[in-house]
Length: 235
Image 1 (cartoon, one colour):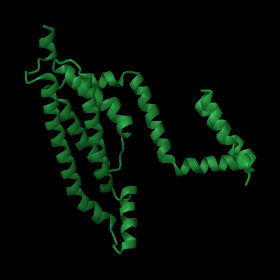
Image 2 (image 1 turned 30 degrees about the horizontal axis):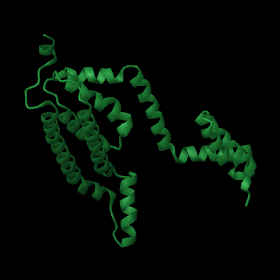
Image 3 (image 1 turned 120 degrees about the vertical axis):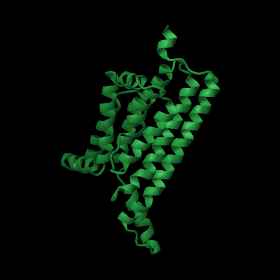
Image 4 (image 1 turned 90 degrees about the horizontal axis):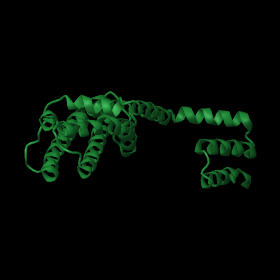
């Protein structure tokens, strides 16, 4: 065995220990591993290209994070909070429930928004906090933490059940490939049709649960007194 190929791991360990640039460390470690492993520059570039193509979904996810991060830095959170602040009687629970419905519809067409990191954090959570401020209440950190869990839960439920509605997704193919050795010939279109009522009921139950839970959390953290509008509070 050529133990020199482990030199790349050593470079990564030393580089991280010295707190050097992470991307530069990984790139140098990859080049060194390719050279001492005997695949050369051409082999390294070929492997890099094939790995990028085979994992392009991860590359798209990284691009989405970069775009969202840039938008967030330029006022995306403020714009989302201002938008929901114009809506009357909007509550965080209703916002999360509506997001679940929207997420299910787009998931049925295999359209992803980036999940928790790409959409919930920069869009949905500022809308929830904007709804709290629009009602004339102060932001309660414990309440916001509960809302983060609710929004993430709705994301998981809607995407889990919604992605199978699109014929040919990885989830549907996984079900088909799992059932085939057991003697069941699963038709993808038929499975998607059967999944529709399941997905609708799942998202509907989750939406109702989060609306009720949000009402109880608001009573817990703010009491049963009616909320004042932001305008009335300033007056």
